Length: 132
Length: 376
Image 1 (tube, each protein chain N blue to C red):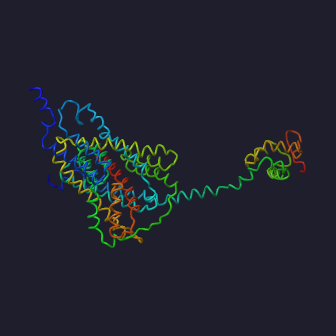
Image 2 (cartoon, rainbow over the protein chains, first blue to last red):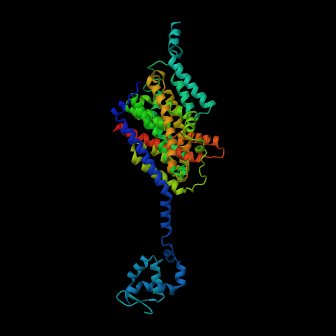
Image 3 (cartoon, rainbow over the protein chains, first blue to last red):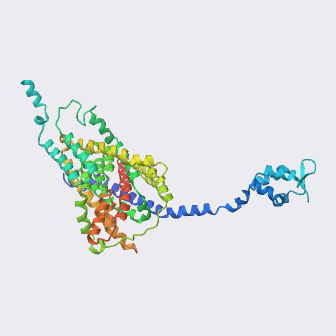
């Protein structure tokens, strides 16, 4: 076995060694960079998850019992929804708005409001508030 | 009488020549080193016993030898030639590897990359010595100090060299306590060896540990797709472990599965060193180049750490560079012991394990890169 440097060039050895060395250094440097930032990236997403409007959802999760115990508050809440609909409005429209705002049991609530006389039928399938 | 004479002619005693006897002695030496000196016993013992068995002379054509079709050994050897055992070993390794140390100290990963330079230096040396490019790549990967990776790449590129490459790789891994310390001491000053690394690093969350195998496999395998057979199972094993939802699988991968693969890998690699195909000038060249590869890998890791120190405010102990080779955990242990010889209060083990883990990934990437080059 004789040591002959010309064989390296003949077999493209210099290019293979240089490219290979650069690739492995590059790959592990990149991986090192990513893992050095990984905890920050995960922390960022955790913060994002925490800053979601959890509080806004909470009132929507009020229990059914609360609704019946505080009908006045429910009326005020539902009246605010119909503010843009005019004096007379369609119940289906009100239902959609309540559902969109994630209010609990909108169907049941509307029935309760009707049964308790807060929502009054004004003909043609339209309704209005008792004290409107 | 004639029958008795014929029988005697067909016994191993009559067919043995000096090559077989020499290889059997090597096998016995491996067994001795693994049992008495506890040098890499998990691998050296099956390999040593495999060498003994593989070098018992036998009548060719009976379907006994590892290179004869339909022999039991040949079927077992398929796991080596197909690259199956190394992949399974990597699955188990992944399930046993704790990356938290590396994730807490990402800059130490660079030492795992630097230590792979021994591979490319040896590639050039092997080419210059007259090995063909595929053989050169197989010899060069010994510099990664990773047995399964060496076997895998050699099985793909130069299957006729599996025996010498595997024996060289595992021999040098077993000889870490002899090879590495002089190089480490030669390339570092006492003051450098006394550098203490900070004990407290940031806490690595479970989420990071779970994300790492996904990020790791994507990045490494996109960079070098040929490393999928090694890094795929490796990161799979790791996610089984860190996910915490499949403890049974993780436990099996890190015990029964890897142990079974290790037994058959070691045994068949040992048996493949049949004297008539093993003792060749090329094998001697491989042993010579293997030692160079391992030494250069150690040196390049240490020197790279010294270069990093030129730019870092908080210096790192350059001994850690020697743990960039992927001999887990042998080289990490040796780095730790070398540092403790200078200062018994200097604990480098966890830092060295970070470099070691990075070295495993680095050598598998190198294998993928070399394979791609040779197939291209």
